[in-house]
Image (cartoon, rainbow, N blue to C red):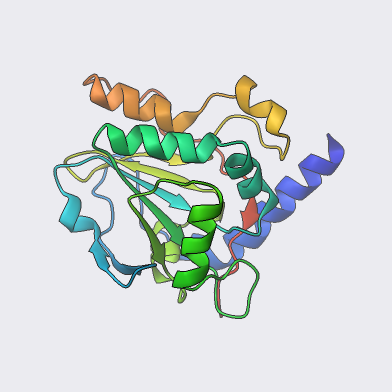
Length: 204
């Protein structure tokens, strides 16, 4: 438990040094618009998806916390379920070139294939502008945006900060919970939660 706590604290500090001062994402306010190229060279703007619920998932394939949620099938299942329900799921990589976690398009596509992942697109944010805009600190770090473009959830993927696959079944999965509530016309009951994972390796 102590080792997990130390790792969690270190990840939070590393991620926040680069990102926190730039964040403009606020619960209950319009989610900041952005445009990024995906792993297949296609451009995506958040504003293109007005009228749809959007999930943003910050990703680093080399992070053990990310590995936990992909190896177990947790994130791929959440992606597939969400996309099947009409949600747009955008996975974003803000790792800088030369730093751990950075991916090019081919690497991102190989990662998606390896884990049978099902995002709507894997977006490349090598200069970290979008990550900083949202104050993304860790991988994974999750954001849910409603059909009107308003940010309704931001934080950790679930309620247990660990790399133990066995904890997934015991944890509250915040994104499916928020998506279910939005689909039912209810307010999101948990709007923020502490993100956990590996600190995003932003460039200077």
